[in-house]
Image 1 (tube, one colour):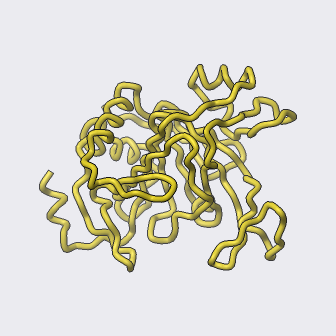
Image 2 (cartoon, rainbow, N blue to C red):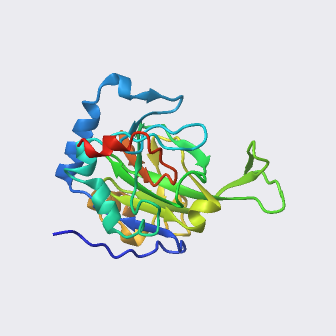
Length: 258
C-alpha cells in the first residue's frame, strides 16, 4: 500500500515542509551500510566534506544537461526513497514528476556548508533526507538595496547575504526537509560547521530558536533541548533529491536496464 503524506508548512515558512521519521531506523541502518560499502572511486573529495552523485541524476554537462545513470537499488527499490518522495506530491508539477538527481553528502562533526542556492538547473523543489545524525538547517536572504551590515557576506554574483538566518530548522535523523517556491528561488540555505548545536526551547533564552520545534519527534533530542544540553553531532549522510529539467536522450536506454 502506497504511503500518503499531508504536508504542513513549517511555522513562518510557507514553502518549507518537514516530515520526521520519513524512513525507519532499520531502513536508515541499511542505507548507511550500503553507503559505507561503496567503492572508493565513487567518492568525490571536497575541502569540507565528501560526496557521491547517484543514479538517473548522474553528472551534468557545463550547459546543465543531465547525463543519465542507473540509481542504486537502495534508492529506487528497497527502501525506494524516490517513490516515497513522489508520494508527497511536491514534485507533481516538475518535468519528470519526481526527483531524478540524488547527491549524497557525508558530513563529519564540525563540517557544514556555506549558505548557497541550488540554482536554475533544477525544478524549484529540493527534498533532503538526513541519516545518522541531526543537523541545523539555516535559511538566509540577500541584503536589500546593497545595505552592508556586519553580518553580511558578499558573493561573486554581486549580491550580499545577510548572515543572520531568517529561520532555523532542526533536521532529525531519518527526517525529510522540503524547500520549494520562493524559499528555493530567492533564499539560501546552509549548515554551520560546528561539532554541537545549542538549541533554545525558549525564545528569550540563548541558543538557536527552531521554526519546527513543535514537529520534533526524537525523544532524546527533545529531552536535551528541554534541559539545555548541547546536541553533539555524529557523522551525517544527506541525500539531496532534485529534478534536473534538461536530460540527455543519448543514454536513456540505461534507465531500462534495471
